[in-house]
Image (cartoon, rainbow, N blue to C red; front, top):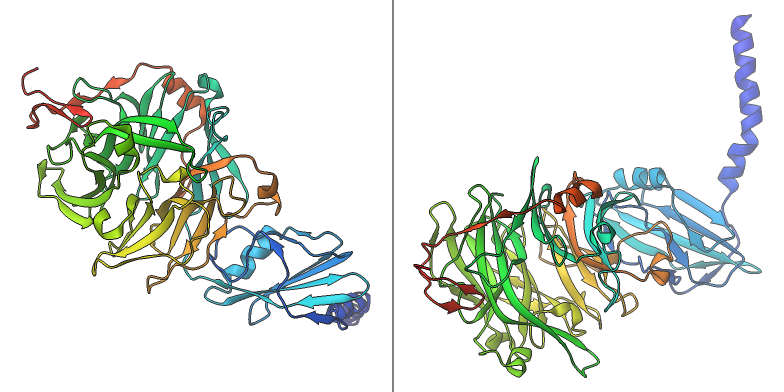
Amino acid sequence: MMIINIIRKFQLIIIVFLPFILSNCENRIKEFSSENRQPKIIPDYTGIVIPPNIAPLNFYVDEEGVKYRAEIYCENNERKIVIEQTSPSFQIAVNKWHDLLKHNKGRNLNIDIYVKNTNWVKFLTIKDSIANEEIEDHLVYRLINSQYRYSKKMKLIQRNLENFDESLIFENSATQENCFNCHAFCQNNPQKMSLHFRQFFPGTMILDNDKLKKLNTKTNYTMSTFGYTSWNPSGDYLAYSVNKFNEYFTNDANNFNEVTDESSDIVIYNIKTNTVTTSPKISTKSRENFPTWSPDGKWLYFISAIETQGEIETRYYAKYSLYKIPYDPVANTWGEIDTVLSSDRTGKSITFPRISPDGHYLLFCMIDNGYFSINHKESDLYLMDLVTSEYHKLDINSAYNESYHTWSQSGRWFVFSSKRFNELFTLPFFSYFDKNGKAHKPFVMPQKDPLFYVTNLYNYNIPELISGKVDLYPRKIRDLLYTDPINVQFDKSVDVDALSGATWIQKNP
């Protein structure tokens, strides 16, 4: 009798849910006309390769209609996501999206869009791809205003790339809106961080795992505090520029604001000994800048322009070449400088060199002159094969500014700044870099609101990929800035005798 009752209950369940099951099976648009083009969507998420752990690619269908339908699926059609609504703005459930991507690594991702006015119209399928390799789960960037107001409510943000969560690392409203810049990490490690603070409460903040300190990096032997930064992969040394720079304005619509170096050198900071050293080879009257380490930590790459003797006109039109020098930080010994890529060969000025984690490729920017590419509309990304020394302009460039870039630790992804979305504001774009050295069509960082960037009024500055969150919060940084900095000590054994760029070293001062 009990078994009969159980069977009857199951029969009842089937009877109750059968219409629902059948309605879902029949819930397909059977009658529609076809449009022989892909739909216009904002942002442009068509023909791209995406990480399997990226946040949902929410999009807005920029087509007239009273009803919209999106079907998101892979070849096996499992875990298909179907959304039908009256709004053209599609926000995909995070859990469903990740479930779809997780089980379809290495496969194509298809998006079918239907739009209804009087009748349904189906557009050509949007075809994307899901990579096997994940991207770092966080991106750190500085949110800044436009020119003349850039330091107002400046923020350092870390964004979870797997969803839409943002958390504040620091905002300068607590420190009289002083400028902070040049955040840098050691091999995408959120617990190895450097950050400079200018104007009020000045100093360089170093986060070294569980140790946090504020440094006064101006010495009697340097003309400035630390500038552009690169961590040695060991985590014990950092290369910094020391710059004496000027900012001025031009009548060039494509580069209305320029920053140049009157003097610039490179120094090495030892975290363990709190000492700064350099070499006469990288502290000269030419202007050495933008240091970056090779992945094995044995070579220091940098850019340099010839001596100008201070003339603004000469500095403005200067072109930077790329060099490297071997350095043993333990023995504090230097080798000889080698030219990697000369501006005489390129006809352009080189800036922002970054080496892939496998040491095979060099990603860099080139502009007509100078090094401050963020203001140059003509700034483009280039790739150099360090094995063959051949280089080429990447075909992912747009007609607008492409600038600061960093690699993922896997070498399969990189992020860069671009103004391609509206020509006004720099935004972070991601590109898949395959094993053959090809950079694939980039896509902008996803936002919960697909139209977020249409109304955005901030620049996303210096995007840095990190694995995990920075274990800092605004009050802790504010309290640190209120303290007196630790003075760094200069290595006076360095054999440089006179004014040499931004470094002034006398053997017996």
